[in-house]
Length: 216
Image (cartoon, rainbow, N blue to C red; front, side, top):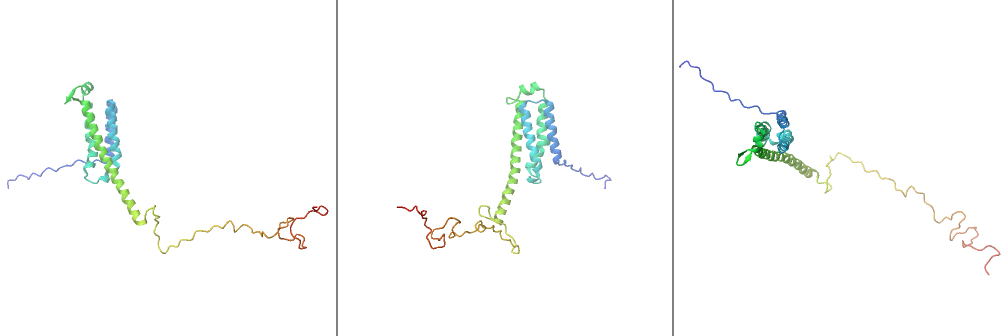
C-alpha cells in the first residue's frame, strides 16, 4: 500500500426536473422579457403563440409518459430554447439586429423569426399528439360502451339484474270511458223521435197540420 487515499469518483449531479409550476414561471419570464424589450410586433406575436401552446400542453404532459421526447421538448422550449432565442436578440443593438445581414443574407431579426416559427410548429405537433391521445381514449371508451350496452341507434339498453322488477307503466284512463252514454233511441223532450209514439196512442211520429187547416 502506498498510503494514498483512494480518490472517489465525482458524483454525477443530474439537473432537477422542472415541475409544472416551473414551466409556467418560465413562460412568465419570457413574456416579461418581450414586454420590457419592446420587440417588433412579429416577434411578440410569435412568442405569445409559443407560450400559449406550452401553457396548454403543460397540464397534459403526463399523457405523453415519463421520458418522452415530446415532453422533453416542451420543458426545454419553456426553460431554454425560447428564452435563449429571445435573449440573444435583445442583447443586440436594435439597429444592428434589424438591418445587418449576419447569415446568408438574413438579419438577426429574420433569424429569430425563423427560430420562433420552428418552435411554434414543434409545440403545435406536441399539443396535437397530446390531444390525440385523449381523443383516442374517448373513442376507446365509446366502443367499450357500445359493445356492452349496444348503440343508441340500435335501441341498446342497459342490462339489469334478473332480480330487479320493473313496474308497468301506468295506463291513463280512456277519454271515452268517462263520457256518459246516451240512448239514441230515446226521444228528446218535446221532440218526438222517428218511429216513436209521442201521445201514447200509437200515432206515428209524423208531423200533422193543425185541425181545421188540413190540406185541400
